[in-house]
Length: 122
Image 1 (cartoon, rainbow, N blue to C red):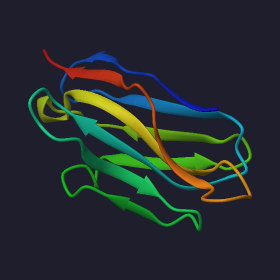
Image 2 (cartoon, rainbow, N blue to C red):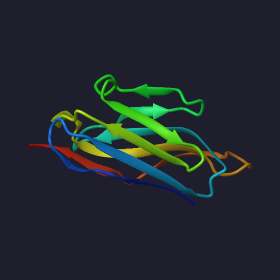
Image 3 (tube, rainbow, N blue to C red):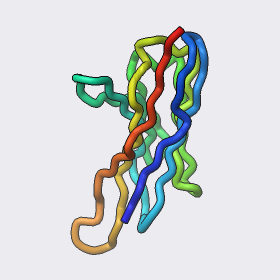
């Protein structure tokens, strides 16, 4: 089985910084897109940032100038460096990845971590 585990969340004051990490483990053949999503109670889960297999990145407009997403393909990890945080960034952040788990049948599957909570408050 494949597992994604997020870490690095916590309480931070407005203007502060946090770095989130995601570690993928298990029966992984390869990993395609990796991404961070965030969700607040009662709302849908929205894309924050993504990094594709070729290294291309995509950011939500609200975070583009403040967040940096990066992946380490050798370690199967994903990171989100967040700076100048504001209360609007408060959410549970989820790691997402398209993972090839087999060379037979339909080998690609979409995986989610359980999330790490980020609270931005004074």
